[in-house]
Length: 220
Image (cartoon, rainbow, N blue to C red; front, side, top):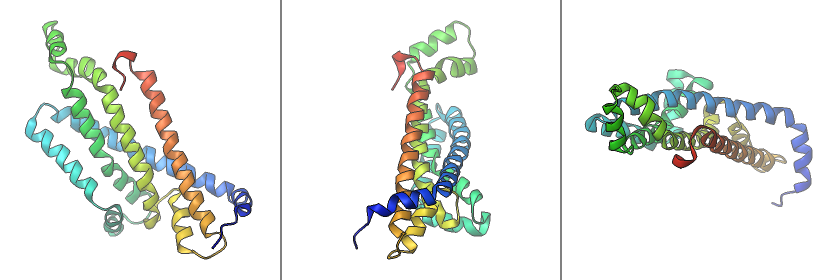
């Protein structure tokens, strides 16, 4: 079936308010999930980075979680957390843990031991060295983990429409469910394109944050 491009503009004009609303929902659910994952992931990394067994267990657990098919996890969450925001936020948060935990650990472990010893030699406590010396140096690597987690969340949030989750995934599922109808491709393509634009916007924001919060000498 040929796709009539002349139908796109009228469709976008007619659905502009709904597209904006769903886009805001998509961005919001990703932001909420990312904040939760950042608190848990960075906190976990800070606790386990120098403990080999705990470090391996944390990274392995986050890795196993990421291997669970998103559709399967969301389906399992329906009887526990119901449809909508709660299931979506929970799923996105745990899927985001691996890059955050891993990069936090890697960033802290890559700090030059000589720098740490110098700081301790100046009388700084272990916690002070961690927060004032190691964390700032590791920050660009940690930020890269957050950036990857954001991209994962933007994509997986689209699948969350399966459990009535918020965001532009609703348009993709709607388009797929009405294949053959006049606006099927309009719904699917609009949802896909907007999600790609949201992902690119998140990436641009993280690039800006990196430039604003790290010195030029340690940027990654």
